[in-house]
Image 1 (cartoon, rainbow, N blue to C red):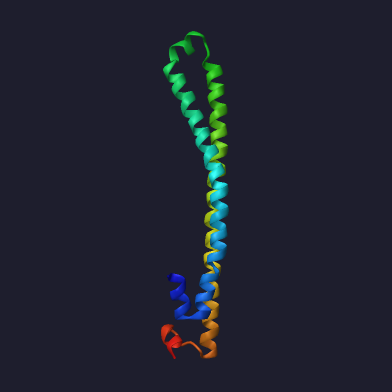
Image 2: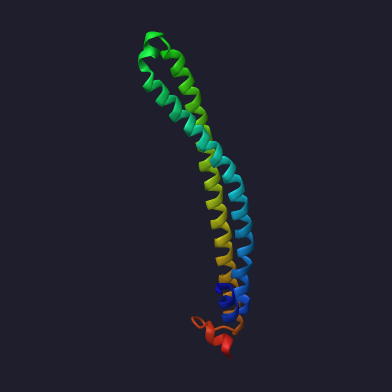
Length: 136
C-alpha cells in the first residue's frame, strides 16, 4: 500500500523510495541467514557456560575434596572465552546490518532529495507541494 501511494503521489520520487526496498530486502535476507547461524552458536556457547557453572556449584564439595579447582577453572575459562568470541561475532553481525540498512536508507533519502531538487530547479515541482504537482 505504501509503495502504491508513493508512486501515485509522485512517480519519480516514489520510484526512488521503492527502489530502496530491493537492497533493504536483500540485506535483511543476508542478515537473517548469517545471524541465524551465529545466534545458534552463541546460544550453545552460553548454555555450556551455564551448565559448567551449575555443575561446579552443585558439586563444589567433591571439587574441593579432590582438589579439582584448577581443572574446573581452566575448563570454565575455555568455555567462557569461546562464548566471548561468539558473542562478539553476534554483535559484529548486528552492527553490519545496522550500518548497511542506514547506508541504504540514507542513499534513498539523498536520491529523493536530489530528484526533488532537480524537479524544483526545472520548475516541474513547487517547494512544499508534492501532490498538487501530480494532480496538474
